[in-house]
Image (cartoon, rainbow, N blue to C red):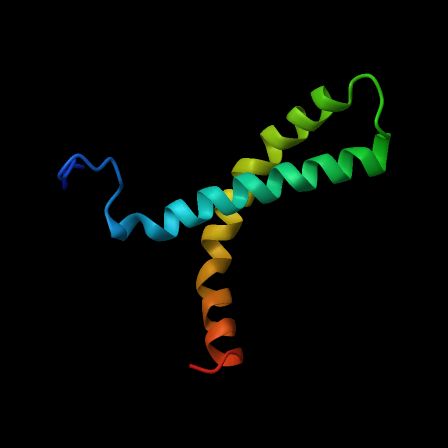
Length: 85
């Protein structure tokens, strides 16, 4: 197993982790935005709105992370077939 090393003062991950970092950031942002919207649509913006959003997010984020990992290859192929290179 390769050890993560810091090269020339950089704390960046190696490029091979790009799909996982992309999935993490994409799922974190989208799950949070969708939690805000869905809780507001279902319950309204009431006294416990943020607590409900955090609860929904705690379920949505891990689910979204694995979903993004699963569908990323398909989406990359769809983009490849849709966009001129």
